[in-house]
Image (cartoon, rainbow, N blue to C red):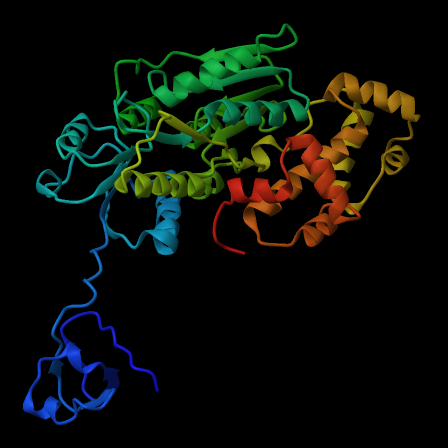
Length: 452
């Protein structure tokens, strides 16, 4: 056996371990001199034997990371899930987190905390001042204040509004309304995008503006006070032209709109289709009828924020001020489950396509349902929907494929079979043409959760 040196972490060799060392590694004791002429010296460690040198240093302590994210909302819990997933896979963090609400001040321990990094929804001014004194890497997930040197990771509100508007347009609406919390930055930002998207003469936009909330910067206080205006919202809803699609700034406001409509006998979704934002499943299901909502990818926001913080703690300084994460899509519930179309044949065609698009149907199958010529159906379909029946079938199939890519680990072959594509290769080609990325690239950048 060739001579070698056993490398231990530090301290003592454990009892009962036999290993081989070169004699010069130890001081010459009488016991050792007796066998020094041997090329190698075998030592049975029947009791701990001090080693002459610490050969490998102790591993560094895991970084201490504070998570100042509310767990009182579905949005915050989604962020925490994404952060936790990153920490399990890559971080090895010692995490400091406790139950808190969105606008809570700094916890008592934070001012003297000696940690390495912070991820927070930074809204409370006192909390921000405390954090700025710590001189450690910080990632913000709120975006309420302009915080120099602190990067922001948040949902792309422009895409949120585009998805909500497209969802209502697909149901035939050309009249729209917006109900938000005036003064809340996310609400005002979403309204500004909606104004841009509906500036065309084909559309009309009504805006609820009667709340006196513009001076408030506390999100919870703004929403709580806004909930006292249900009577005013009901009067506003009663005056709106019907049918109309209403975009609420979030699910809290969307539920209030539905409450006001129900109390004043406004038919939902036939006269008033309502869609919210955040997809708080408990809140949406408690609404009457259940509320459709745009689902942000909070898991990925949290995961990307954790990735960024880990790099910052290692010395990286991000160049970009904000990283926008695309929302996952629209979750359709009863509040928008309607086709606001005077053309009954086109409405029947759309309904059939939405029910059977993933069953490998073709335009001929649609024609069998409506008894129109192909040219007539396509002309009337394009006038109302904005594209052909074939394009609508493809759109629904691809939307379904995107959700399966984001929410499952199914192979591309299985997803192709579940979405009406005959071959995985064809799905891949069409997907790349439509979205300018492969299904695999989309899955990597839009993974919702670690679940299968």
